[in-house]
Amino acid sequence: MKKALEACMPTTIHHWCIWHIMKKIPSKLNEYKGHADIEQEMSQVVWNSHSKDSFDRNWNYFLLNFGLVDNKWLSDLYEDRHIWVPIYLDHHFWAGMKKQVSSSIFNKFVVTYDSVVAEVKCQCLLFESRGILCRHALSVLSFE
Image (cartoon, rainbow, N blue to C red; front, side):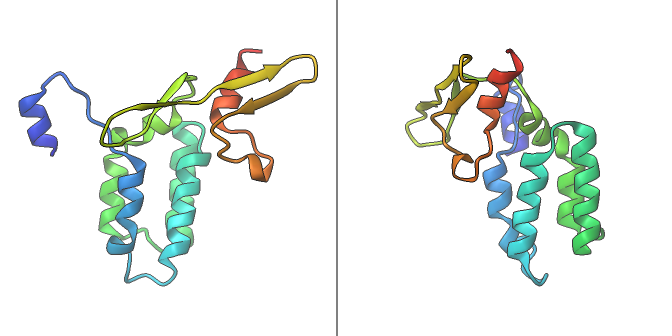
């Protein structure tokens, strides 16, 4: 796909989607016991790293913790991290987050902030059940 995109759309920047990467884990890491735990931890590394340095530290710990230091697929994935990691470390607030669907529509997440009671809510509801603010809400608070 990379070569096709470079040939057809030379000015386009192509990034990998974390959903596609995570979907490959069962087939790429099936020989390891507890690949479901590996998938969960890898997701945590991506979503809970707030800088490139913290991603590198968390990734190395993840590999050591699961004994995956010599895994070729994960090594290659790490070498190509410039194609997928920076988009998950971007702390800019986007009024509309693109969701990959066949009709290519945009889902908008509205964040409301009440400064009187210091309450912030986001329509995405990603972590609300756990009492954790999503990155959309945190981005709004960073401007306060």
